[in-house]
Length: 487
Image 1 (cartoon, rainbow, N blue to C red):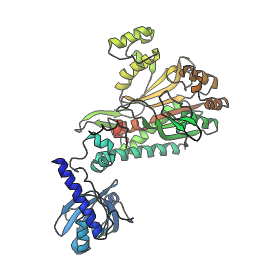
Image 2 (image 1 turned 90 degrees about the vertical axis):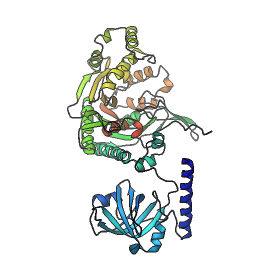
Image 3 (image 1 turned 180 degrees about the vertical axis):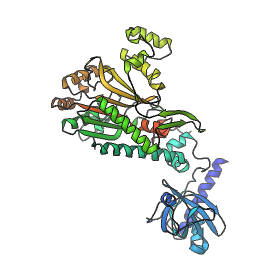
Image 4 (image 1 turned 180 degrees about the horizontal axis):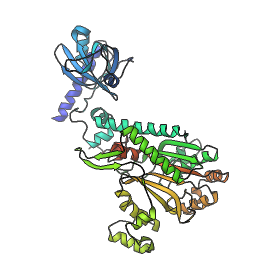
């Protein structure tokens, strides 16, 4: 019955499409000059203003010889009053062929109804685009997550909270750019296709360039190219763009994700930590209006409140591990694995001992930390591009910023010694020298200034600020498994 009803609705809209054409009206319209958007008209409402506005019809109330309907876009909505005395019978016949979901343009004068609703009294109406499929019921919205993520356009039309989520994301990115530019950082662009994927340990996506006859990789990080720019004389740079990693998909991972990386010549990881702390607080205040970020469930109950008030806590990596197992670093690798097995922490995928420790950190520290925590002085094996600590050569001068149970930002005192850097990369590659980015190492040999660097996962930052529980809720078009084939 539901399929029959849907097919009948589609047939009715097709008949209306044909009827518009019979009236000499193009159902897919032409350009329409506007003076205001629906949302701007409503938020800055003034009576008696001559206006031209356009949008999608999202509500309709038929009063016989007159109609009230809403037109909407991403800015908001405004009510339109259409009366046969004002527009004439021809326009009313056209409006009879308009459905919820169609795009229309109206010209008229603003007024307030008896109920106090800001409105436009239409003097003319234009059909701009006919919708051949009905929109989701506005009272129920899009609740099916398959539709929500695969047909994001329907989610944006039907679910105001999703539209607000992406307005918030846009505002976050805008404020980050403004913050960095106000502090003298310059935005740059580096290659997304690279001959050698570097800057992180991750599985890349591979492609082939026919004209050059070479394999290329979608970048896993922009780091090695940004550092070339430090060699070239830039002192404060940042890039906001996509990275790609051919790895698992989860509520915290998407194979295509947005990263901020920034580098500051003559700075160190301490200065970068202070910069990030100031920036995130600035963005939260500008976008959310508060440093107390509430995360709620689907029913509106508060799950947790993240406190971004400064100063943020700092703790050394080793001290945090000892807070769980005081004698962890005195144990043998075998004893550490045995402890994991006893405590139901699956470390079977870890091939090296430092990976076991990191896995314990992720499960028992990172995932349980909600308020900001700078984790400092990590083992050098974890961060092969960071500068070695002067007091303890086992460690590197880094921070990992954890908020909302996940890493939001790493920051380093960048390694600029080309000899040490080559040795670190060779160890990371398992001795496979063809995996080394020789051009980057050559650049370092020409001299790179001491510098601090940061990365910030924009998707995760937005998740934290917007109270989203899945990365798919803050990415407009997340990657999904293909639909099962229909039988």
